[in-house]
Image (cartoon, helix red, strand yellow):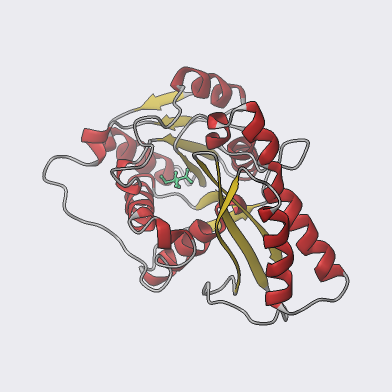
Length: 281
Ligand code: PAF
């Protein structure tokens, strides 16, 4: 596995690969890799000619009061995991390389970035879109892989590439869960053992929603009430939002017809966790 830290070198490498008619698969990450990331990497390794993984903890998507400094990092372990999986290139630029002092350009997807997580994290998707579009321009992938766990992120990235006509195929892969159902996330590392147990309530509440749907319930407010009832039964959980939205535009849905995204964000102790359930997607 080649490790590249310079944008110029990554661009040269990508140009060379395209000249050789290689299909480039790309998995953007902030490192501290878990099985969720590795499922994306595995898919890329098996379905493209060359896999590039980026590890970059993107300061632009953290508000000043958020956990940029504490965000877990272990580049040596990430390197070992990626090497073992057959990744061809690890791109890990530093902050100065991605955002030099005179950096001024940001990407926004209005009407999408303000919803769901955007309400409590107003600069988050602007930071995500900016770094992802930069990485796309540097790496020029044929296919980029994202996890369904970050459902809003996946919807926004798809909208961004469509709007700016970026020639990349976005593949969104299912949520990877711990044995008990908790969605894998780098931030699970923040949970102490009591909080880890409490965090399961996110999954349990979505399971209850699934049961409602199986019984034929279509009314969003009834499904949301059931989810909230379960989340509220956990004293360590503080609900930020639970919503039923259209996965195409993130607009709230009163009734579930064909497609729906049930998304939630909950604080367990100081750790903010997200999870979701898709219907018909
Ligand atoms: O999902 C993430 O880890 C990040 O938001 C991403 C896409 C790597 C951009 O920094």
